[in-house]
Image 1 (cartoon, helix red, strand yellow):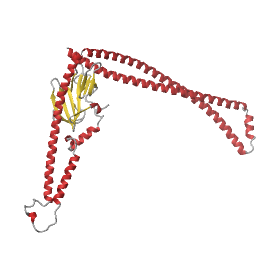
Image 2: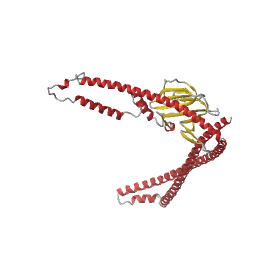
Image 3: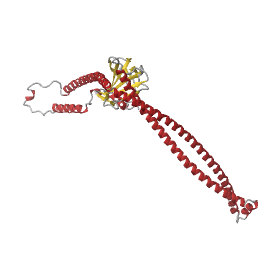
Image 4: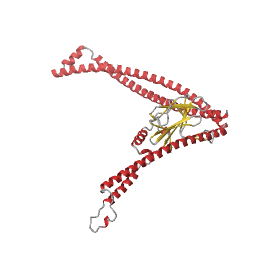
Amino acid sequence: SVKGQTKQTLSQLNVLNKKISIQERYINSISREIRSIDDDIYLSELEIYRLNRQLDTLKVQYARSVAYAYKNRSNYDYVNFIFSASSFNDAVKRISYLKSYRDYREKQVGTIYKTQELILERRKQQLVRKEQKNTALETQTKQVQELAAQKKEKNAVVAQLKSKEKELSRQIAEKKKRDRDLQNAVLAIVRREIELAKKEAEERKRKEEEERKRNMAVTTGGAPAKPGAATTDKPTAPSTTPVSTDATASSSRRNELAKRPESYLDLNAKDIALNSSFEANRYKLPWPVDNGIVVLKFGDNKIENTFLTIDNPGLTIATPSAGSNVKAVFEGEVRGVYNLGDDMAVTIRHGKYFTTYSNLSSVTIAKGAMVKTGQIIGKTGKDEEGNGGQIDFIMTMETKKIDPQGWLRR
């Protein structure tokens, strides 16, 4: 049908955009690698040039020392040099000098050999880096060609979508209605949770107030005074205890209001700990599916070459196949399992945070169940064309929608 074809084309466009983005990042990484190799080759050239200069200097110095030794090669010259010393100490110094000179020449030879070996090693390394560069250039050429093919395919898909803009507009309206129905179901759950938490908070407050009054009665000596008891003629010291107690109670109420959290879902110790733990895992939460690709991001998704925009309440994630495992991204309590017609959805509460997993073909947990991070809660439903899997993943902080990509692992 035209509707099915349009959905398939839109899904194609989303996947192609993701592929092109990944491809461009890959090509950029290859370009960075090539630049790094070029830098290494350049530095290697400088090093080889420096070593060659050093080798030339060493050879000149060694040639001079050999020439000097040749001129003074006879044993008579050496013996004469030693015995012509003015004293015994001077003779010892001359022997030491001749030994040092011989060691120096040997060291020169060793340094020349080491420098030659180092030059050969640098040239080998340079050849390896040049081969790596050639390989990287070949890979880059192939990837650029593949990117061009993907962009060509994308342009064809965009043109196809443009020709079906009216049908696409109707589809977007249908999606908007489905999203609204899903959000209304989630909001109903959230509001119910808030109302329950509010009642619990009010009940705790009522009990605390009763306890306070009982303690006050004990402090002031029991039952209140009878009428007329305070009109006695006997002078008594004025009692300020009731006034002080009322002032303290009033101050306590003001402090309570000042300290009251903005959320009723952040009052008891369990919720406070869960909220804190959830917030500490920002950018660390696991993805709800393995090997997923985001085909529709959170918020506005502009369809190229049209005036159409899809407002997505969460992330639409594609999987290689339908029936893939869907997992809870964090520990919590299942507060809603509902049927949306062709698919199912699950809402899990994590303190004041809620995660919803929609377009599930099946569900493996029930309302009220406690789930752990990474626990399987269902299976992905089919995407629009029926070739792969897909889920909609929504996050809210109470009734406020939030972008899941700001919380999931990067």
